[in-house]
Length: 378
Image (tube, rainbow, N blue to C red; front, side, top):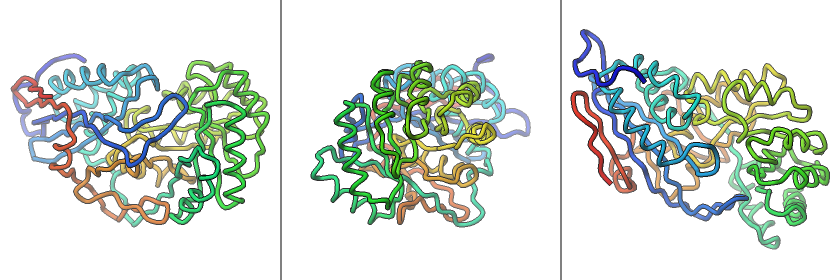
């Protein structure tokens, strides 16, 4: 990033007066078990940008160690440094300065980039009519006897697409999946997600043994970088494979399109870097003849709202931006509405942060002001 601090307000232009960066500590309502760990909390990074007219924009990203090469500590360091360099600039100049970093540090860059897009009034975030965005819901139970009751509860809440976490042990995963298939009895569509935890042989064994009844897709069987392994699984799987952790940017979308058996690609806002970039990526997936899927199940209301706004324009299946339903605390003063298995976006809805809640769950914060150095706490 070139330049440094811009200390003077640009003549006749709105400039960035303040950037606040926070790391939050948000407890989950219930433990969230995936193949490589069990979460009891998430610690997303959140930025709020304020311009010289008093307008605000905010963005966020949860950076999970092991999900990608980014780390929470590295992203925090970048965000505090970038904040110091961006105050005093116009929002457009700040976006231009951040853009090159999306390729190398997409999650960190997205925190500020999406805040700037909101600050500028990106029309994606301004639905002109009331909009309903259907969501999926994960099946949490791993005790087979508890599954039927949980399925009934999920269906009663209006969900019609369920996520089944696999990637633990092949035979046990297949037994649990069969129980879920029996319990849903054709009343819901299933998405299977290994979270890149199977070996090539395990993924092939699981995919080849599937009863495809009611299953939409099998997500990310093998490691992010194991393109050959994921391709081998896609070749034998009885349902289409979807890539997620392997996908960062358009080159990866194009690479996925060349693999026989990969029928879906999932994107997240924090992986593409910005609202317009995300929408373009989803449209690129569709042009390749694949089906785009969207959503971050670890995000707070901020990214879930932003992704839902993109979803209304770019996908026609269940969104995965359900992270906000997992947390005990909600960050919006006017909480994101959920009913009958879907996010509800009223026409003109533009949320504001609940300052009291945000402060209560803050574990670290740093503020950069035009003409001043960053002040950090926590």
